[in-house]
Image (cartoon, rainbow, N blue to C red; front, side, top):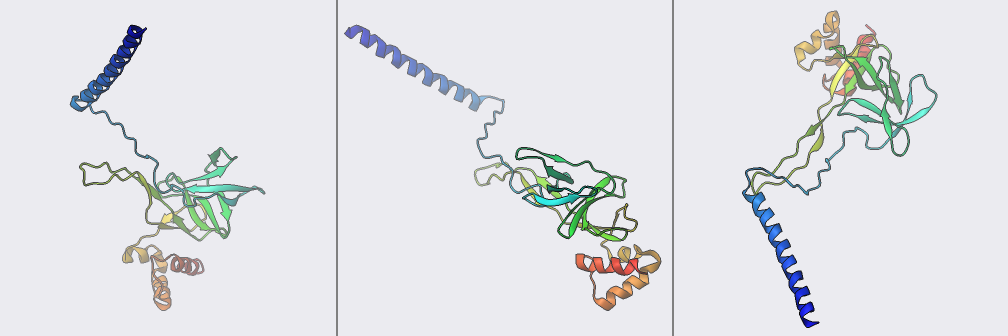
Length: 220
């Protein structure tokens, strides 16, 4: 009986030694191997959000009497509509597609390259309107190259808004930011716009002022 017990514990000890040795050999192989084996246990969830609104808003799709819950994906430039608790879809993008909410709307216009694009505008936008292009980008993760650097996860960041205008309710034209090009943008009404801006102390890069300029221009 004593011999059997001794043999059992001896076999158990050899098993643990063999297991430990196997782990050490595999670890040593990884450390000395020419191949790179990356086992990253850090949280890889991206920081920030690709959406302008983090929660779903109630909105109304043009031509429909039903309200929908939606978010605007500023990374892809798409309107995402909630279907149920587990799923959502991007609505089909067509010229004139419009989702209104509060006093604003995401509406599809044709950009200068001929692509259909969503812009933020007023819900009453018809022919002459200021359009805002909202964008986000995904910054790649920063992997530490030494012990002094810190890991930075991939992060969504907002890029500067760009302003556009529509003069026909269908096409979007980018508003120049440089002073000379800005005034020339209004063609024959260049002097009138310049005088109006000077008189009312309006700035060409400020949203509220641009809206006033466009209203003035539309009445010339």
